[in-house]
Amino acid sequence: MEIQIYQATTEQDWRLARTLITQYIDWLDLDLSFQNIDDEFANLEKKYSGKNGNFYLAKLNNEVVGCIGTRKHSNEECEIKRLFVCDGGKGNGIGKLLINTATTEARKQNYKAMLLDTLPKMSAALKLYKEMGFVETSAYCYHPHPKAIFLKLTL
Image 1 (cartoon, one colour):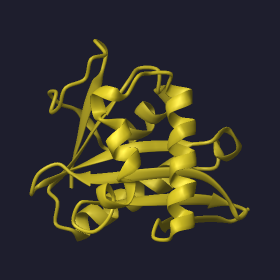
Image 2 (spheres, rainbow, N blue to C red):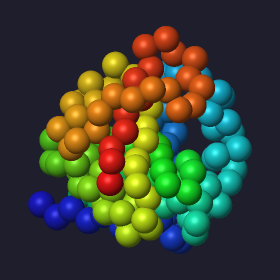
Image 3 (cartoon, rainbow, N blue to C red):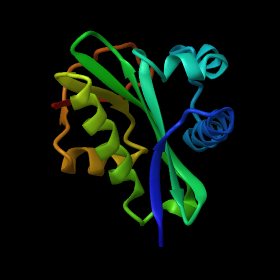
């Protein structure tokens, strides 16, 4: 079993990222228009590269099975977005590797904290976040779901 985590940089990478995000949205079964998902999709490369953020893909045995994005929230905080591992990649520690990659890069970029929002439905991710030191925090952005959970990791 070979796992590789790498940053999206090529046109092919961004196509794969869009495919994974589409699968994530379908799995989530939630209207993400409140997060301006159409604009994000149209400008993925700009939203998740350079000073704005990063986007990572995960391969398992040379097949892309997961992703995670980070975006600048403020000068001191970044935000995790779109953590997703396909069914074919689950159970291999890929989610943890993706989060570790994102937090390592955030530290290198001198962020002081990492934020995210999630839902109770995402129980495996929520458990993983808490195991990795994320703690509940107050809402830092609008979320229409009444049970949205906001987490923060001090870097």
